[in-house]
Image (cartoon, rainbow, N blue to C red; front, side, top):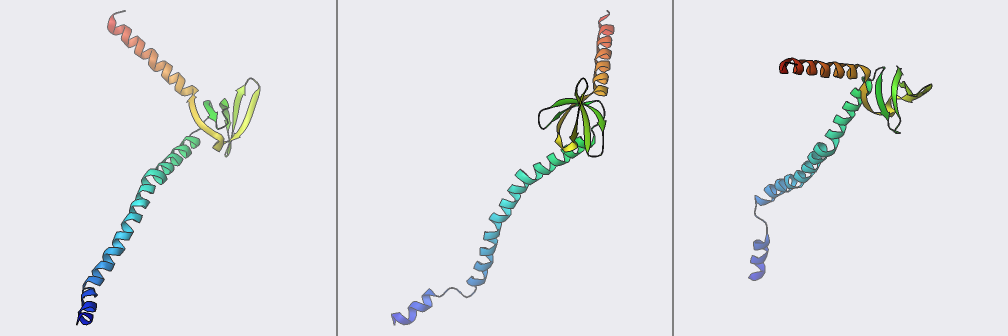
Length: 132
């Protein structure tokens, strides 16, 4: 009699097989979705933002900007072409670089003039307020 009841007791419930399969599939997809989400927010998104900022910076290069190349060369932009930039490094020394070789724009002559005028205006307004 034990041999007849034992297989019946070991059989899974009738409706349990379907629900366990769906839950198992969902349970195995959730970790993959979390990994993809983590990769997107920690790796892919910041890199795309940085790439867009770099493209914007390279597109805004103009004559007179002080720049640094990826090789560490400091210079002033003398001429801007489609894919290259001519940089004045020293008196009578000009070097042509690809735009993509520029790592940073330090400042431009126009910005320095604006900053100087702004600081002079602030000084004159401070002096007027103090009665000097």
